[in-house]
Length: 186
Image 1: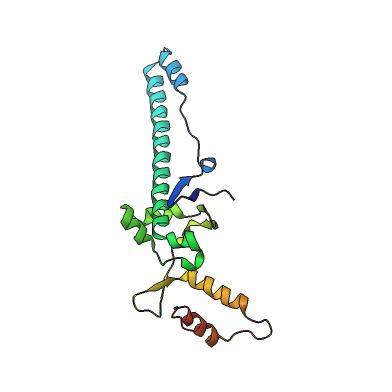
Image 2 (image 1 turned 30 degrees about the vertical axis):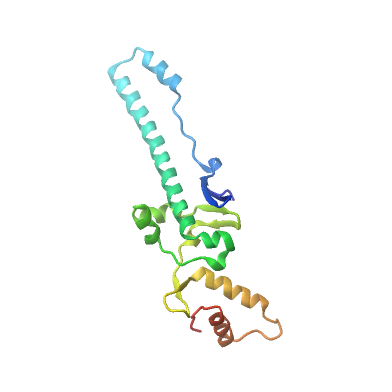
């Protein structure tokens, strides 16, 4: 799988870049344009050529806009999820589309569309961008919350460490999660 976005840490700064190999390549050859302009053709032909040239330029501009939007959204995800990028899934904060959309002044549907089926390569692995948007689960500490994904990660760890011959009951799992500050009902 090729990531669409690459996240790396340079000294203390997080950097976000698009993976050029996954981007569509559309160009308009200026030499062809110059050659076409020198042709002696009818007004209808000139109109047809100009319409198609304008369509190509519009497509190039739309791709550039999409790339800028992807970068903007990715940078905001990194900004809001720094602990995740530094320490792993357990530190994924609850975040919804609206949180990112509001910060970057875009509509939620744009954030949803841009992050759909896109992959992000990070120092801790390759992730679908949708993983960063997660429901909130209450904490034992008032006013705090955990992302559903970080709770799943805690639960995976507890279950992988349990003895095979005597698995933990649901009540024990809930008790262990409470010990980690996660308030979860059975």
